[in-house]
Amino acid sequence: MEFTAKQIAHILNGQIEGDADTKITKLSKIEEGVPGSISFLANPLYTQYLYTTKASLVIISKDYVLTGPVTTTLIRVDNPGNAFAKLLEMYNEVKLNKTGISKMAFISESAKVGTNIYAGEFAVICDNAVIGNNVKIYPQVYVGENVVVGDNTTLFAGVKLYSDTMVGKDCIIHSGTVIGSDGFRFAPENEEGNRKIPQIGNVVIEDDVEIGANCAIDRATLGSTILRKGVKFDNLVHIAHNVEIGESSYLAACNVVAGSTRIGRNCMFSGQVGIVGHLQIADNTIISAQSGISKSITKPGGVYMGSPAFDANKYRKAFIHFRNLDSIVQRIDKLEKPQP
Image (cartoon, rainbow, N blue to C red; front, side):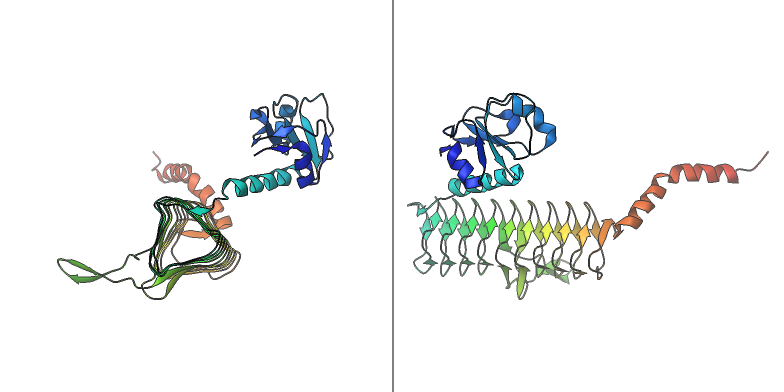
């Protein structure tokens, strides 16, 4: 891909200072700029690099006042960070704009496939699957029987969708994620072991959901495990059977949610949060990293910390006392020590 400074300035509605015909073929960080690349300056900590960078084009603020000579062409915009993010989005769209069905992909005769799809090498689309328009199915993806994938959704390499899974429009599922594997349910039977309970439900993923790499989302025992519209997962998230995640909730890496728990809307969980089963988590709940949730949270908008977790402000005060516990014990021992 090659663009001129003039073309980029038009896209960003910016003002050029320097050579409008400068050609750009790549993106770079300002401190690692090379000829032919474009970068940006938004954080004042990187100001020094504006005067030494070898990038051919740098996006800066309209209000920035130069304090020395620069060798790069400049584009001035209202918000350099947002402008560069727009370029990243465009770059990604072009980079990931794959089309066509590989001769080494398998698509069942009974599957229904929309227009302008991409199916890479060794992708498998099974019986009665329904694939929407503009769907991208990367190599070694498995789409099971009766699966539905909505328009404009991307399944990156190695994604596995078990039978009856339903994925909405404009979703992104990253490599290695498995959706629809059996929920973890066993019933005590006798001294020799337990009996596996069949899991005959499915997983429903609504529109505009993004799921990170190597996540596992279990199918329901009965009914559905549900991720509502706008949910975002980091990598290595595990969601057990019959869980429901509310709209626009964000879960960072290594979150684990046990069976049949209901999480509300607009929740934000930091890394390594664990939630036991059959709980209710209220809307707008924030949970700090490595917290363990052992009972329902019914008040919306709370912030929780610790394991077992409780109100974050109370936890911080309690932690101060815990940190001073050793000195307190020494003082008590000294007071209780028999006097000669």
